[in-house]
Length: 344
Length: 286
Image 1 (cartoon, each protein chain N blue to C red):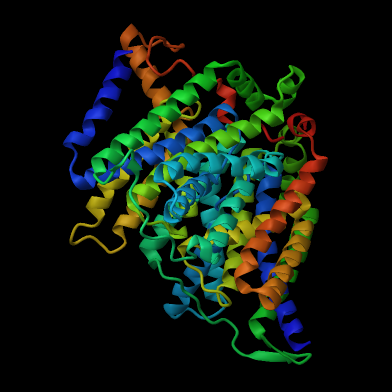
Image 2 (image 1 turned 90 degrees about the horizontal axis):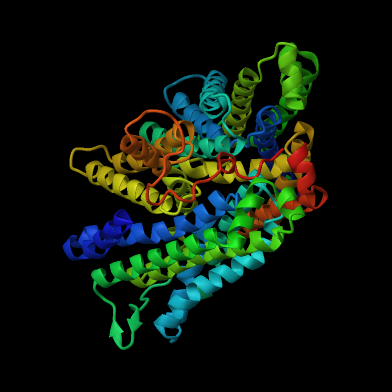
């Protein structure tokens, strides 16, 4: 418990000490964490692969921005962002979630590509140029302008997503969801409404991304289709896998590790004297190498692996076995669910 | 009439390249049950490599063949990482190929930069039924026909082809007769690399490629491959041709910017239609 409180405290105090540019990274880390929590919920617990999470991030952003730009209140925009993303996911999910495994992966990717193409062509969405001049978020007459307030807002959002995820996992539908990730037949025959639960989780995970997108739109004040490339969807998957699928804190850890690594390498790559493409090369290489190495050698992700190590260290032995008493490790995946939905 | 013929020919040519990419998906999926997300990478690598080899003064023919072989080696390498470790779950392999595709971005940018590039292969055009058609289109179609015939013979007549098919139909039985499914899986990746590379070499003169063209190429190839449920190369050919012609007609008669949406929507429709017949029972037990 003390570890959780410590993490919480550090998270709250961090905006007071971070520099302006670091604060931006901190906020984007938080929005990435929210979307990644959604991916982890969907992939790790419910066993469904999505390569389209950034599409819902974009939907959240556009919802918030359009409401604010058309004279609606910004708070309404922020509230509608996750709702619209979730509802659209529920609609799209009806046909798409009939697919499993790699079919679902490609279908969600296709959804993302179609969304980008449509947004880029419709004038109402600002076309390829995007939407500019999105007003800052105003809560009860106060306009949030300082980056610091956005940092707190973002991490409040992260906390909300974590709380929702934790409660769902521990609940009866959460158990049902984990059951359907291993075998839909077994779950269905035990009375789990498989289709309805899959749809609900898909919508919820999209809602997390939508909320993140809403915060992102108000913070940056400018969005365009180019802000949500396919690579962003891949990035959320990488973060989820690296952190540890089917863990509550894994997505936050994954988002943190990758964002910070990419940022450090980006600083390194843009120093004078480095080749022109160094920054891009570094960031692609980091995503790729971390993803592949973790999948091959730490298939459960960084968080469970670290927790194992700490548990082993505490008990002072090297015998393999389930370690206990490590915070944030209470909801480990059964080994099978890291290969969601067996496809043959 | 003239414009119809030119749309048709260009559609068939692009369809052939989708079919080649798609048959790469099929070759790999049949043997390993892995959908290779890096399939578009093969085409990009081969296209960029052929361009720079030609720039270095290698003659036509040799440069293209070397580029295709490079793609084959890349396929081999991706196969080793993705399926070489025994017991890697299928979906983990899928995400690994996705990761390797991103790694390829880094390598491609380092070698070739981030600008799209192209090169001429066969210059000039011919008149067919009132339309002016680039000769390159016929090169693509001709090469695809030859390769698909060769592929059919390879799977039906050669020992290696039969061994690959054996792993596809029953890996356990294949092991009993002394075929190593892991090695066959890696070889399948190399074959997928060669097929993807060929598509890249053929299509780059028509449409410049850059490091991030792989997503579009891979989705089109995948769309072609799912026509046969990812298991039949001949169905991938049909799928690719249908897709290519539909895209060309939409681009020609409706609006070029709807091309991608139509292709993707078609792919979604086919997948969902196919899923109607497939219950979770058949998928989990089979």
